[in-house]
Amino acid sequence: MEDENPSSVEELINSLKEYFSIQQKILKLEAAEKASELFSEAISMLLILGFFFAVFFFASFALAYALADYFESMFTGFACVAGLYLVIAIIFLAGKERILKTPLMNMLVKNFFKNGTNKN
Image 1 (cartoon, rainbow, N blue to C red):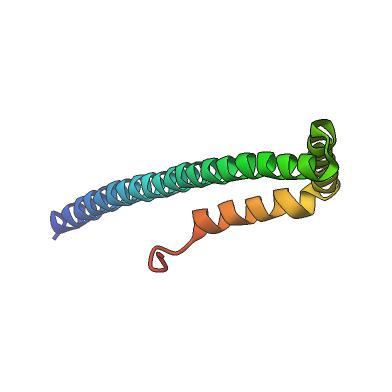
Image 2: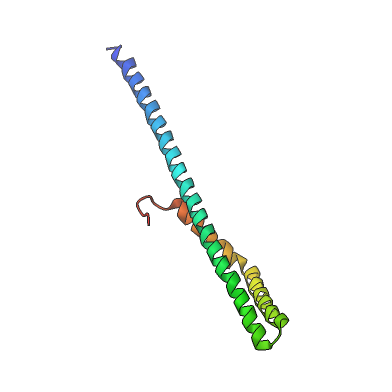
């Protein structure tokens, strides 16, 4: 009966080692999954932002030329567009915490901690 006790303890220790090894592998896989999700999200957002930038860039020139025709001065048209962007920049600067930082942080935390069963 004494032989059974150490054997049971050894089996328990071996089972615990195997359990922790499996848990470690699961954690590594979950970390890799989260990292790949964040990376793919970042790449897709950069791509989308790139397209929006291109649209924004050409729309800015279109607006500047339209205003230049309206005011009959190229300088005035481009200066109006620059002034518009200055006002927008000041608004973003004044409310950067509420407008930019908090929503971006919430999006990142939401993506990081989203449940694996709620995939879009």
